[in-house]
Length: 170
Length: 103
Image (cartoon, rainbow over all chains, first blue to last red; front, side, top):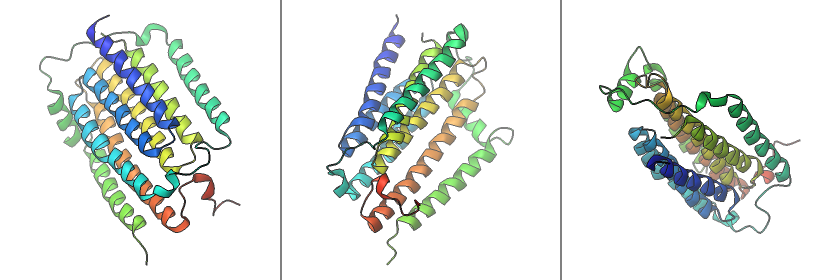
């Protein structure tokens, strides 16, 4: 077992434990903080996968913006955080069964592929600058310029829509 | 070195945990936390398949992951705005109690 495998196992354990705490912890602020730890574990995986830019984006956008927005939303709806009732709805055993079924199904599907997924990554081409290639792919007309522009329109629409929906109509 | 299947099993576990959060939690914000976990599981898969493909010079997997980032940010912004708006009118964020359109 080499160093990357140890790092993978540690960060996978971090992700799974934090994700379980996200869906089970009673206090929503704690759940949001556990979400930050899970997202950080995913950022470590991106580093292991040699996608450094995505690791940085994960920390800046997910942890820096989305998780903080969750904490703000929790604080703005504070009264219900302290509610006495159960945190899960009445049909939670069905939900538990469904998600176990999903996991077992996905695991069975993966095991059916045999050793097709057991190969190790090849070395990145020596003349490849992943960041340069990613930037080129995002703005090249032969590649993804259209989805890139559509994503910017989507973000603008979401921004305007969020301001409109959350405005105090009085 | 890590075999590809490790990433796939981890992403399957993360997706299932997120699915439980979405299906079982009562608080609307907790449901959003579950959705975030599911989106991250998908992203791990996309980036892992990019890295283990025979031609990692093609950046398609990473571009897909960036699009997922953008969609997640948009979804959280609109979703939390909806939650805050509902909270202001109905004074609750419990999904069971937001039943105005239930017949």
